[in-house]
Length: 398
Ligand SMILES: [Zn+2]
View 1 (cartoon, helix red, strand yellow):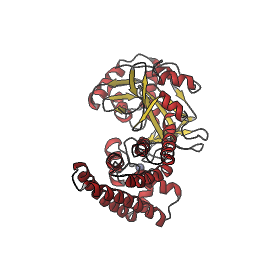
View 2: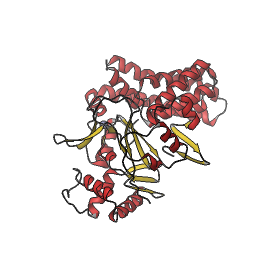
View 3: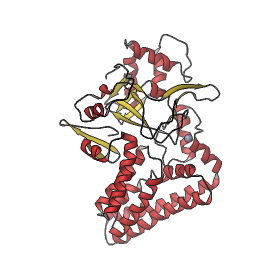
View 4: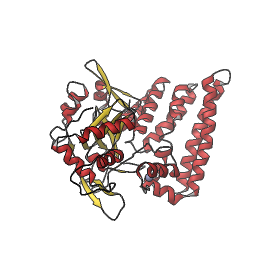
C-alpha cells in the first residue's frame, strides 16, 4: 500500500526522462502528473455527466494524461484491494489527494454530493465506480482518468509504468472530441453482452458509436456474427485435433487455414455488401477479427509453410485496417510478426509484419523508432517488456 502525489509537470517528459524511467535508472514516479491537450466538460443533457475532451487536434500516440495514483494496492483480490484503498483514503492527510477525492465525490454517480467531509460511503462509492485494475492483483485509484467515459470502441489507450497511468491517443483525434476508454475488454462480446456488462458493472446503458452502429444494423449484423461464430466453432474443433496430433494433423492444418480465410471473407463480404463507410467497417473488423484468440493458436500450430504464408497475409491485411490503439491490436500485431519469423517467410513479409507491429506499438508506447524499442527491451505479446538494472518489469498486464 502506498500513496504518492509528486508535483505536477507542465510539459510531457522528454525522451531522456522516459528512457531513464523505462531503463529502470529512475522510478516511474519521476514521470509525475501531466495533463496534455485535455479538458473536463460537463454535459447535463446526457446521463453521462462529466467527461474529458481534447482542446486541439491530437495525433495518434500523443500523450493525453500521466497520472500517479491517489491510492494503490497490490497482492489482493479486487474486493480486498478496494477495502484497503478505502481504509487508506479515510486516513489520508495529503491536501491534494483529499481535494481530488472531494472533486470525484461530486460526480453524478454519488448520492451525497456537496459534502465537504468525505464519509466512508462516499469513498466506497468513488473507489467502486472509478477504481482501475492494472493486473489480476494490482489496483489503483486515479483522479483525472476517472473522468473518462466508457466506449466499446474507445480512442484512448492506457499503459501502466509501475503504478503510473500513461494515457495516449489511440488514433488521430479532432479538437473537442470526447476521450473514451473501454471499462472492460469489449472485443468478441456482442451488443447484448456488452450492454449487460455496462449495466451490471456501472449502471448505464452504453450508447457508444459501436453500440449505435450495431443497434442500427440489427438483424443482418447479428446473422453475420452468427455465421462467423459457427465457422469459429469448427475452427476450434480442427485446432483441438491439431493439438492432439496424430495422422490427421497435417490435413487439419490446411483445413484450419481455409477456415480462417473463410471467417475473414464473411466479415469482408458483409462490410462490402452493406456499404458501410471506412470507419464503420473498421469498427466491425476491429471488434470481431482483432480479438480472435485463434490468431495465437494458428501462429503456434500452423502445419506448413503454404498455410503460414496464407495466414500471415490475412493477419497483415487485418492489421492494416483496424484501429491501432487497443491492447488486442498490440497482441495480434505481435503474433503476426512472430508468425512471419517463425515460419521463415520471405523477408519482405517479415519486414511488412515488423512495420505494422511497430506502428501499432508506437501508438501505445510512444514515438520511439524500432531500434530504440528493441534497445529498451523487447516487445512481447502486446507488452513492452523492459529489462533494466537486473530487474525485469512490464509496462502492462503481467
Ligand atoms: Zn458501447
